[in-house]
Amino acid sequence: MDREAYRNCCSLVKIPRQSYEQFWSSHFVDYIDKELSYSKFFKRYLLPNHPCMLSKRFTEDWKCRKQWVSEEGKPHFQKLLQDFDETPVPVANCNAKEYNANPKQVIPFKEFIHYWKEYIQNGHSSPKGCLYLKDWHMSRDFPEHNVYTTPVYFTSDWLNEYWDTLQVDDYRFVYMGPKGSWTPFHADVFRSYSWSANICGRKKWLLYPPGQEDYLRDTHGNLPYDVTSTELQDRGLYPRSEEACQPLEIIQEAGEIIFVPAAGTSSYNLCNVDIMWQFLQNELMSVQKEISEWRNTMDSWHQHCQVIMKACSGIDYGEFASFLKTIASNRMAFLNACTSVDSSDYPRHLSETFTTLGPYHAAFDLQRVANIIECLICNEDFKRLDHTTLTLQPEVMLQQIRDTIQSTR
Image (cartoon, rainbow, N blue to C red; front, side, top):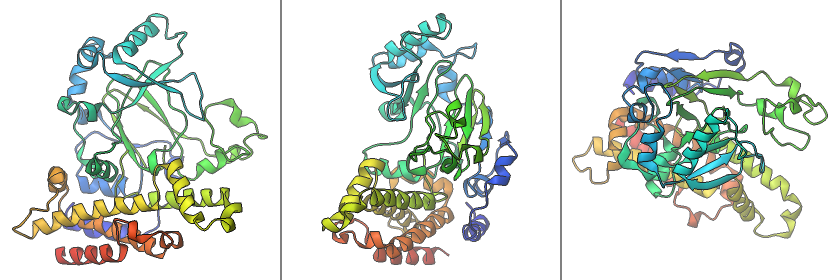
């Protein structure tokens, strides 16, 4: 990000997010076939949260496209088996429903490939159902394979940066499945954005703009399992479904990369951290409402709400604060290293990303973190936390961020 883009984006984030109605009503997305500067992509798609499609030229040098795909454009089963033969992989059954999702089992990779071949030979059917290999941490388990390269547009990935720092988890997945495999209606983790490259075959996406999910809830407040089901026409079960707009339908061809905006359906960055914060507040409100009858009978009611929230959502306010601290600390270390001969505290594992995006991007990231920390300081539920247990001391961190930003102007 250059100085001009930095100044422009600083002014743009102060403008409330535009209505999605006009964009979605056009029922098309921009198709990017030529190199676009990071600053332009940032302003046109990341910041306003607009979907787009990158052409196959952006993946033509990837090893997975060269090695995992046959000359006929089909999955190269022999090469895949050579690489992953006995590897245990998570496989879901698309024909079965379990708590609004598909039940999973872990099986050897070669067993899944054997099933896949039989499924094709039997006219795309099997007594086992339609199995879908999904949420496989292939990149984490086989880092030496280097089967893809993250496009520069998506290198600012706060969520994976945080998990990589903790060395606990990541949100980089591989999906493989035969014709007919699909995923139930959902939003990505913590309402983050995602980008997805299709190596071979075709994939159909149905995207609803944020807010439309409220029209799709049933009488119990639950979201539909399958948005293409005729059940949604039942006004007794889905009383407001008629008010929902039609989803944006996108066909993704082999080699193409789709950018799916935050809360549009895992990656996370400065452009949607405000959405993440709003998501957490809504999650906590839901928990508080659910157990409100116990509020006056428990001294630790607020702490219990945080525990339940983390069990349901995977994160609570304390971990969110830790997440913000990690992101801010990495960027302050980078900016301090840019102006100091002593760079011993520089986050080396992020050196390539920070060098590519530049100091203005790091400063812009810090501004966004500062905005959220200001919200935390004013939030009544955050105030009730035991701050002695937090890794982030908000007032101290806020001042450090302001001092760092001031020194880089």
